[in-house]
Structures are given as C-alpha cells and as structure tokens.
Image (cartoon, rainbow, N blue to C red; front, side, top):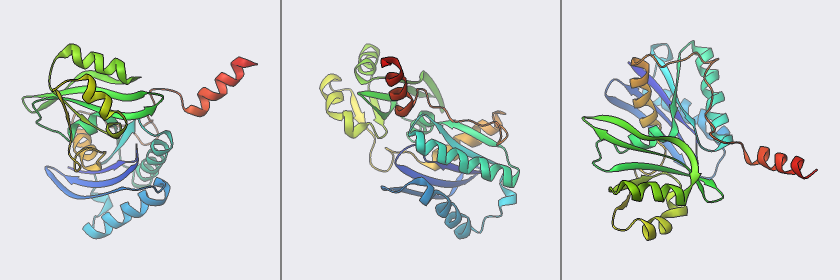
Length: 235
C-alpha cells in the first residue's frame, strides 16, 4: 500500500510518501512561511525526487486537526483537490494521534500539547501496549492547569510532544515533579511521515472517505468567531 501524507496543522509544513513499512520520502519545513507558499512546491519536489507515479497511490492522509485554523484549511483544501483530481480516497488523521505516533513504542504516557492561546492547549493522552497505540484521553481543548491536574492524578511518567512545549515547559516542570519528559528535536513537532503511517493503518481499517466528505476537526471556534460573538453580546 502506498500513501501520501500531509501535515500543515501547525508551523511545520510536511509532506511524505510511505509504501508498506518504508518511509520513502519526507520533506518538512518549520519556518515562518504560509503553507499556501510551501505545501504544493514541497509535494512537487517529493514526487519529482522519487519519480512517483501518482496513479500508483492508494490514498492520501492528512492531519485533520486540531491545530492552526488557517493551516488546517490549507492542508485540507490541498488534499481535497488532490483527492478529487487523482480520484483517490482520503484519510483524516487526528493531529494529536499523529504527534503521539512519533513516539511509537514509548513506555511512558504520551501527551501532545498544541498551543491554543489563552493558557489553553489542544491535547490528548496515549500509551502503547503490545505495539498498539491506545487512547487514554480523546483530543480536547482545555486549560493547561486542568491537564496538569489530570496527569498528576494518573501518577505516571509522561512525555510531552508538540509546539506547546516552549510555551508551557516551565509550568509543567514546576507542577509535574520528576515525571515530565520532553521529546527531542527530531520528534517533537508534526511529521507527515507519522500521518502517512497512521493513514495506512486507518485505510486498512476502512476509515477512508471521499475527498468531498473529509472535514477538518477544529475542537473550538476560531478567535474571529469568538470575538464576533463577544461583540454581538455587548450590543
């Protein structure tokens, strides 16, 4: 099985090709450029470098959210366009699932944290048992202090991954004594390779959708929507 993977749910733009148990190519950039500028040129470069026959692709996997509203829309629209043009199914991979999958085989709890602003994070909790990733807590948007309380009540070693680490690392280290670990540089951000690998599993489980039907997962309203509602409420 051959899967294309895309992730633009955060600052990282990432494109990958996975074929069965081999990651054929992965192109990731973590730099301040809009994904509309980078994602398709990166895809073209990967396809050209690997001489990929797009007709041979079985499906396309995309990080579906949560994450940056703009990034998710760009990634989803890119994948929808490709899926329709190539007549390929699409697999929506939850962003936190893919981030946790970076740390496949860890003996610790895995906690993705994405900065959602206003002291909130997009987060979830996972563990690996018998080579299977188990969801302990589903994706959610919550206050970082509430998440810390949940983790402390579980009383287990936990490894954090995601762009929320620089924002909340000091608070985590202060409140989770001697049990908090942080993923290293090559594993601590979104990777299309993980999206493609999980997408392949989900394809085999029958979780693919048509490009028309796949949708992003936001978990909460955008800042613009919240500000508009607050403004309307004051009228």
